[in-house]
Length: 340
Length: 290
Image (cartoon, chains in turn brown, purple):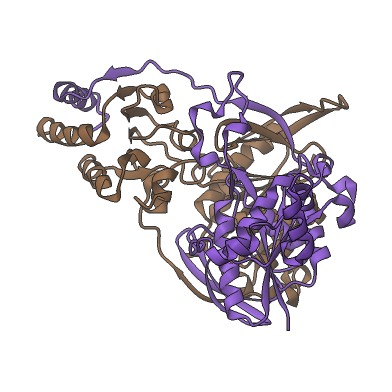
């Protein structure tokens, strides 16, 4: 069987993106289960500390394309390189971060290779599959697991006969874990001109304004999150007050973000950030599958909701059946009193 | 000079407003309980198409939708807002298509429509949220793509300049035409229906709709080419049957799990001052906060 590959994204600071390191951690586990190696594809220019960063995640080979035309990312040259590498090396599995880069190029790569691709997986596992009609059994497939149909169902997707098996995964879904601090792989430099041609550079970046990440809810130990039930941007202020007091961050559901109550950076769930705080306070959040997929690993969950049957209550450790508008000010008040 | 803008639009179940009756007793989806709507980001794409049409002389907007016969509603809705013509791509052979088979089907429909200058679609559809069909369709036609479009900056007969919305900022890119653009929900909302256009196009119909239509409507549509919504099947597209629908889809659904919640032993608390005070004390004493 062939190896597991991860497309590693280069950050503004020319390091390797967290989401890619998380995928390498998962990729190493998948590779160990399959008894194969782990390879990384890095496309950019003057990437910093490449080998030092990647080898500890258990990377056996780094394929590195270094050319000033390859940074910042544009779709066509990156796609060409990954497609040609995949045709030569025939990965068993090829993973991308579900970022604006990964979600832009992975579909194009899959289309070119005539392969299946599953977006925004919340879990990846190895297992067997029997075709219902032909009774043919496929060993050791990649189970690509994701909520579907508005989160009302969880689907397990497989690609029985096409290779590579491709998937994208959001940042924070997989855990970043060092495999062996002194692990050593090898670096293979890609001869860029053999993989791209002039037609790949027809699109030009005229201007870029990328901000450094302002909020980091992924790293917060305490998260106070609001749903559509908070009603307005104004009402979210009390959540900021509580979060500040507890040393936490404010998060939100997609519905609240879509309604303009809060910025997208704070969205938690399948199409937002996945968080694992010590304490998660859900305020007026009914708890759709997509939202829960982004927070159900929290240490303790408090659900404040007027609906006693809200799905969030089923995974909560504390259920307060009351309006968040009432309860949050009380939490603020009694925390101030008791923490003195 | 003609300049053709194609909008790929999809009719989707409104998964954002899933009510309690959306799931049947046996845990399967009750599709009938979900209203069919114009995929929200496809409406943003339609708006951008109308903006392009306003800037390029002689431009026309053609709407292409893949789905069951009733998807002609999407073409009519587009006409009410600014589209000139449209077509439903519909065939039982398309059933069960994943994004690869869908993009192949759409690319074959686009080949039939060619030449065109710009193809626009929403970034993703709310029933799948994959964001794959746009880029895959572009690849099949060997066209460049601009994803996550937020604003049309400039367009002429040869080039387009678009501002894109990324996770942490914006990027302005230019691409030669033809090019495929996927439009982000943060782009300008689509203008509403225009009363004059509603009057003009309300009788527009696809052949499958005309079969059950009144004689008056049939006569109107037959007399006016602008009211004729196209209907293409797999045979019209000259498509390879092995690449359509379920057989053209490399991804297979191994299983579907209904969402089962593992109930934890939750502590139930009322919202009174005394109870909240007790809770805060407990959280502090167990070092969860403080």
